[in-house]
Length: 87
Image (tube, rainbow, N blue to C red; front, top):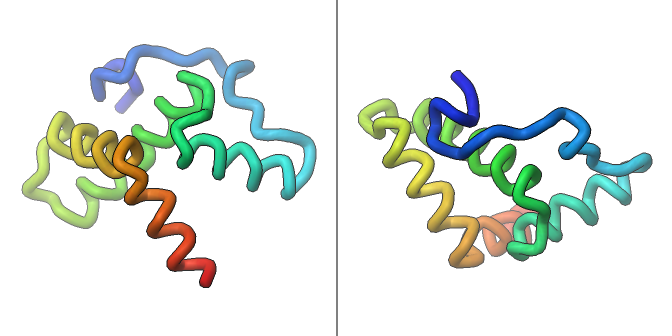
C-alpha cells in the first residue's frame, strides 16, 4: 500500500525529516495537527491515520478512511484528541 494507492500523491524520503530531538519531533507533530505541517508531513500522517482507522473499522474502504482522517485533521479533532490524551 502506498500514498499513491490511497490517493494522497507521493512523497520523497527527504521531505519527511522530523527533527533532531524528541522536542523537535513533538513540535512537528503539533504543527501537523494544527494544519501547519508540510504537504509531505500531512500526507504521511493522513496515510497512517487512514490505515489505523481501517484496521479499527474494517468496513471502511481506503477512500472512506482517508476522508475520515482528513476531516479529523482539518477540523481540529485530531489535535483535540491528542490534548485529551496528554491531560
